[in-house]
Amino acid sequence: MRRLSIALSALAFHAAFHAALQSMFLVSGTAPALAESRLDRVQRTGLVRVCMWPDYYAISFRNPYSGELQGLDVDMARALGQDLGTRVSFVESGFSSFIADLLSDRCDIGMFGIGVTAARAEKVAFSQPYLNSGIYAVSSQAHPRILRWDDLDQDGMVVAVQKGTVMDDYASRALRKASVRIVSGPQEREEEVQSGRADAFLTDYPYGQRILSVHQWAHLITPEIPVQSTPYAYAVAPGDPLWLDRVNRFVDAVKRDGRLEAAAARFRLTPIVARD
Image (cartoon, rainbow, N blue to C red; front, side, top):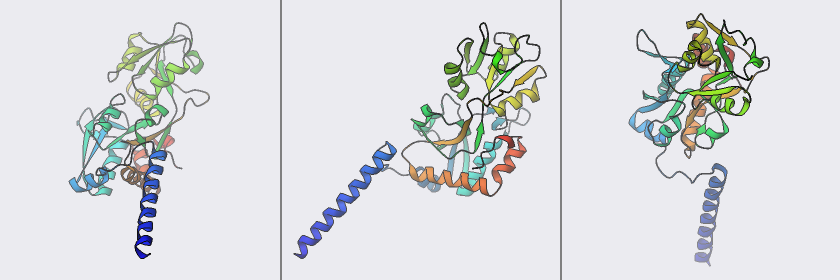
């Protein structure tokens, strides 16, 4: 009887264990991660690899004079490394390539103001938000027809967007009359407007501020009602709950201890900080 009791207990344990695994699979949509967590590897190697786009004003950009990387998310990446007790290696990426970079293990985390969309969330896991920005437009002050947001989606208008961004996704769905021109190179959107090939381009709050600070010709168009307010979060490869939990604890910490607010103030991003 004692042996039978032990056997039944073992069977019950294994049944519960496999049920728990199945539950994890159903909730996450991915098989349970059996390989080493990125958190374990980061701590073992003493290095966290951060994907970033080096041309995102106030978020992650290369100073044209010193060549030094600057921006809110550069500061946050270094803060993450400090919290983990590791070095930080920046890996150049972008909105059209960061998913592939994460899935191919080219970097451990994407930190450059990545907007959370349903399409992206199907492929990568996101932290809790730390910024939140709507969509804005930039046109020329001398443009004869564009004075407000509703002037954009009209017959004959050409609106430029950067490939792979939230603005690209929005324009393809929302603009019915205007033509959408998709570009991919750095500063190509503003070049399209300056040259007259486009009447305006869509952007977010950080890049809109850059344009105003650099170009005297620029006119920032703010919609009367916020358009597609999008949370920005950090992205990691799916199927690694330990790493995602550690990133979330970092985001929570920088919100509570003032590091996020301080970095946002340094780069004039205070209006879009996500505080909840």
